[in-house]
Length: 248
Image (tube, rainbow, N blue to C red; front, side):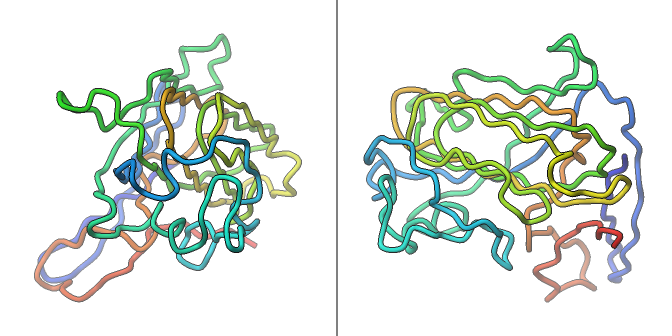
């Protein structure tokens, strides 16, 4: 398994380097946090399990597509939902956050785990338990056969593999568990596939977050259409998404 690192020289020359992390004891996944106020219409709102908030296929921007019409049990329509995973000045603030999955937590060294039963990545002295945020991770992996992905937590979680929804834990609820067996998805061994993960914490009083997976997810692959550009020769180059393409 390899991760792609982008090195950009000042004259605009881009080179790729690869570093292996086969047999790594940890996997670092860097995603995007967005902090919201409790006054947002979809936060601190109705409590309930709410599947079907998003469509079965990711949008062209790599984000979930709202499928709730005028609203669902726990959401208030597309306009407000579309703020969850996009930067909206005056509505949310954005920061980067890395979780570390460790293969020493369970007896199986092929399973990588991150577990935090008080998951408050945006804590501050004046706000020790910030309940109102979203988190998204975008990465990829090479399918080996036999992999699984399990999430336990609250609130909403959606997982997409190859742009298709494979886990729907939508809603404002106590801890729920979802699991997907990749062997049931019709994937081809040796091919590369996108992995997209979306989480929302929308209500007090709990924030649980646990991942257990045997997928060798690539480390720290950037969010869609988001790359930091270095060097004078690259001014104006935007929207670059570094993703390995699947072999058909």
